[in-house]
Structure formats: structure tokens, C-alpha cells
Image 1 (tube, one colour):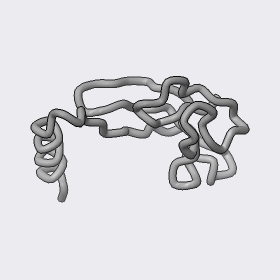
Image 2 (tube, helix red, strand yellow):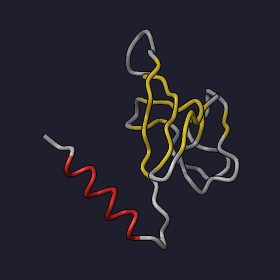
Image 3 (tube, helix red, strand yellow):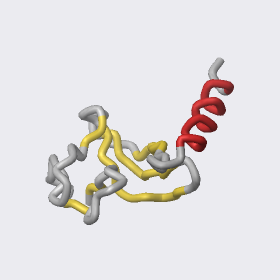
Image 4 (cartoon, helix red, strand yellow):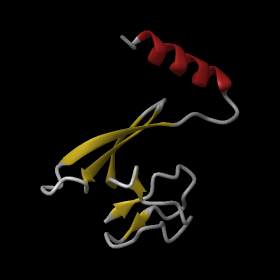
Length: 89
């Protein structure tokens, strides 16, 4: 099963053979490489997905972190940007 990463998608589950979400029409392969399978966690700054790397022959599993911020709360966005920037080496 492919899982749509559009935060506003009403029906994010799709078949493995789908290239686009059946509900919102968003592309299902990220960077033409990663297929998300399921949400494995979520919190204040976003969601974490279980995914597979379809670019590699063995299609290893990986995790993808999606940052999501409430549109009406720019304070959360600024906090996340400052935390991310302070972690850069």
C-alpha cells in the first residue's frame, strides 16, 4: 500500500501500483524514489513515515520525516526553523 503525504488528504491509502493519490492526485513517489507505506509517528512538528527506497534493487525500508505546521500558527514554524538551523554543522 502507498500512503499519500498530503496532510489534507482525506483518503491517503492507495494501491502499490498507483503513481498518484486516488483522493487528492498528489504524486506518491517522493523524489521519484521513495514510496511511503504508513505513518509510524506524529507530533508537534510533523509526521514520520515508513517508506521504501524503490531506486535500490533490494528496496530497503527507511524513515521519512515530514515537517508540518499549522497555517495559522507562524510561531511554531519560526521555532522549528531556529531549532533546525542550530543543528546544522
